[in-house]
Length: 355
Ligand SMILES: *Cc1c(COP(=O)(O)O)cnc(C)c1O
Image (cartoon, rainbow, N blue to C red; front, side):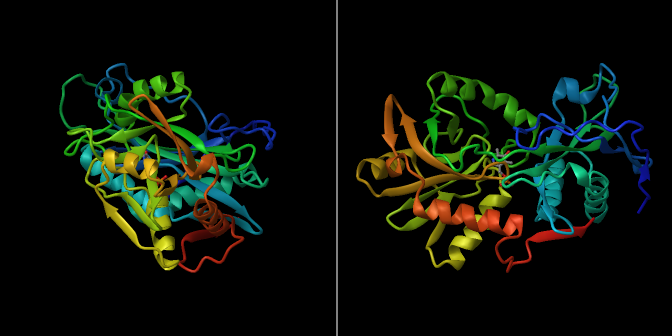
């Protein structure tokens, strides 16, 4: 595969205060870019100073939304950094690319691009507890024409952002509003792909939930508004009567890497875990009869997010007394322990780089 050219920034930015990072507000000094066309394939791989990307006003992405992305994190280690299952993200990006007719990425080369960029930016990996370097690879269709057709030219970019602990005051239960009007995705659509368009369609419900004092939306299936799909940008799991249930991957649910990892850990711990259709009526019954013991979301940004309230059709239900459930906390500790390198990584999930 091709070499990655490196053009270093002449002036480096001042680093932000690592104790006040928030999420996605600061960007490092460099970014990775490469382009695709059918004649040359992927070409012009380069690390360049972080800057605006000039774009043609007719570019496909601006009109028809041909855009996919990924999100993963790098954690500081004693002698470099570690990424959590990065190949899973690269493979999922290729699955998203296939759905939107964007070109596939060469997997090993993409891992090399991630590694080289982060190595160059290693001083940007924050070292305070709970902080990390968020990695945002993204790809967009970039034909300079208004014709509606599969794109011939694409651009792939990786940007990096140091991020703070998701929960400033430790793990905190969130309030969730079950949305029974808008839907995020339908089977046959793009729900399983990590594409920008899914987010554009989800913002209105998010805004409505926030006006009611809820921080995230729990989505129901797009056909019957009957089955639980996921919560905001997280997958969702419930502990009902001692067993773990989570919505099965029907095509409209995003196949989360945190989800997959959590399910594996829970099985190893001896829990009965089922991936199945979960109707909202069954979930509400479980709230009412007290068999819903714990509920949480899973995703790269927050890792595990305990659910303290569910709102459905005018009624608010408290989950786990609005406390962090015992298993929720244990799962959070185990996953973040593996990621931060403080717990044993039995399954070889971390990809360590000396830098
Ligand atoms: C990214 C994402 C998730 C979580 O996936 P992870 O791989 O665990 O970060 C869940 N739902 C949606 C809609 C997402 O975009």
